[in-house]
Image (cartoon, rainbow, N blue to C red):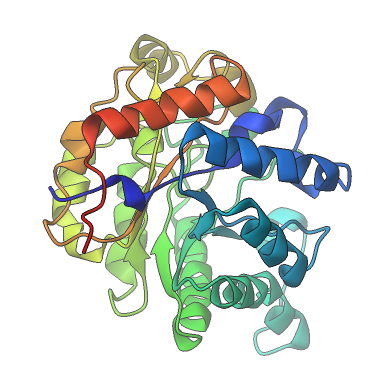
Length: 312
């Protein structure tokens, strides 16, 4: 494995309270954002995951990134399931075209920030109406083959839009979504050609869902464009697998800074090709300590286990 520290970025979730909603969409976060980015850099991370707020322009975000002096790593876009929102789209209609407007916006953001990769995921409905999020997370609850086929089609179409724009989409799994289990992840990746869709696994979410993480990394190693890494309290994972519950309450005490939990992250990363040059994004959705301390502990893990980038 030839990973080096310059390939690691952080998703700044530590500084938000996910239990209270998606703070990034709150206009008040605009005042908080510069401090968050400065503290991420202060912790040691050379890059942050791209997150142009819905409340700001691409230009203002790029200006802030330049002022703070950090790089950006690939961002993330979710594909919504129309039926989950009570919407029936007519094939070929203007409404169907606009369903993918967020994908085109993310392509613009990705290009504007000098990147060529984006994580592509099925949505998590946090406002109610999604049984995997609201009731039973992590075990493939309420599986529906037709819904999986429908989602695979939507993901494939979004991937085609991104590919046509010169962006490499990397499929991203997430507990609480309709593409959660190993079976579902494999279905999506096997149905959509490698030329259209790469892999961008979240190793912690695969572990929580009981997947063979090593096996998946080996099987799709040549499709991996980028990764998310997160550590977990494995005793809590075992409890959740035996007695699953709603996503939000399940995450109480679940997420830990890398190296503080029991997910064998180094073993998993060791499955990457020697030539892998993509981004590794560290995520601690709900930190076990204050945000800056959490980011510092996360960078310490990177610094301890990976060499500095070679200099010319």
